[in-house]
Every structure is written in structure tokens, then in C-alpha cells.
Amino acid sequence: MMTPNKIDPRGPRFGATITSVLTLIVIYFALEESTYSVAVWIVAVMTTFFAIGATLGTAKHPYGLIFKTLVRPLLPAPKQLEDSRPPKFAQLIGFVISSFGLLFGILGPDFQLGLIVTTSATFFAAFLNAGFNYCVGCQIWLALARSGLIKA
Amino acid sequence: MPLDQRFLALAGLVLLATFIGLVFMSKSGRARRIKNGERVNLSAISATKNGNPVTKLGEKLTLLQFSSDFCSSCKQTSVLLASIEKTQKELLHIDLDITERLDLARTYNILRTPTTLVLDSKGIVFSRIVGAPKQATIEAEIERLVNDDSK
Image (tube, rainbow over all chains, first blue to last red; front, side):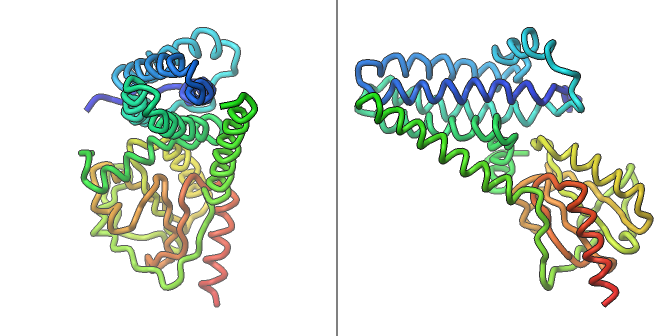
């Protein structure tokens, strides 16, 4: 097994803050038919970003790069570093959920409820991560692994 | 949908998420006393410490921590419990990685990591802490267990 990379734990939380705001904007636009396509486009971008985070890790994620270049220099050094795998796994969960959202979005406004429900789920996860430092995706891993759905 | 209703919907969402977050925060890291707890069998969990198998419990108390790879606050908890262990002679801290031992997660019903079981001198579960505990919580548990033992 590869030795896990260490990352600044504030990086993923910074990204989650942006995701929380973006998901709220998506829901706002998705509630109105004239702006529905804007919502779908934002979901498409978010899904792409989640895909990057899930494959390359949160440090290579666009928000991760923004954090590294613009935000981290302004902050004091982190008290401790964190394993990069939990947030990476959480990105995968985000990717799966927002992929469903994107599918609903592409299928048109008839599937508005689907788009709003999936985006709300992403919002809850991102908001809990940003505001309460609670990583829903990381907890889901244990539930999935225990039920045998994924291999540890 | 009218503008104000959309804002109302968003505000509702944020409020609900905040509520969930606050409930989570109030529950996380709290010790819950277990009445008639089961006895933890050291050889069954095949715990190791610094590479060596653990054969003896802490003289007064054992902190059995369940961690996993996909856990953001396990390391921080491990550091805290290890530092408490250093100051308490009769206390043993075991950090158990359940990433490869999901059978243990089932046996001890671990739904979140870190979960810490406070064991008494006989290895019986005294209390259960789900989430990252604060130092004061652990200290209070030590006191509670020691007082309970002397009764």
C-alpha cells in the first residue's frame, strides 16, 4: 500500500464551503424554469470537480489549488496534517450523488425534484463538513464496508 | 416560483442543516455509560501496541479506540488518548484499526470512527464514546470509573 499523503485539513473544509454555496445557488436556479439550465450547468461543473477530487485527491481539486495558492499563505501553519484518503473518498461520494443530479438535470425540468433532492444531499454533506467539521462521506465508508458493499 | 419563496426554501435548508449539525455536535465525543457491559476479549481482537500483541489490560482502566483509514479525527483522538496514558500509570490505550477488521466493527457495533470503549480493570465495557472526545471527558470517565470501582 502507498504511504498516505498528508494534507492540511482546512483545505477540504474550504472546498466544502464553496460547495455549500454553489449547491444553494443550484437549488435557487432549479426552482425557476427560466433559470433551470443554469442550475444544470453548475451541477455539470461540480460533478467534474468531484471527479477530479475523487481520482487525484482534494489537493489537485480546483478548490484545493485555490486554497493552496490564495488562502493557505494567509493562514498560520496547520496544527496537524490529515490523511488525504478520507476526503478523497468523500469526493467520490459527492461525485456519485451529483452524477445522479446531473442525469436528472439533463432529463429536463420534469425531473426537477430529483435534481433538487440530490443537490440538497450534497449541500447537507458539504455544510456539515464546512461548518461542523463532520465528514459524512468518511462515515459512509464504514457503513458501506460493514455491509460488504465495498471492499476495505 | 416567486423570489421570496425561493429564498424561504433556501433559508429552511440552511436552518435544517444547522440543526442537524448542532445535534451531531452535542452527541459527538460524549461518554455514554453502559450498564451490564460485555467483556472484551483481548486475544479475540488481536490488538497490538508498538508492534507487540497486547496481552494485559490496563491495571485500572483501558481505553479501547476503534479507528479506520477513512477517518478524519482518529489521529487527533489517538494523540490525545496516548498523552493521557502517559500521565496515568494504571491506564492503557489501545488504538485498533478496523479497516481490515470489519468483523470487529460488527461485534462491537461500531458505526462511526473514532469510537472509544472505556473498559474497567476486568475488561468490561464501562462507557462508550462516539466521535472525538475532549480531554475533560476522558478525565471525567476515569474519575467515574475509579469511584465506581471503590464502591
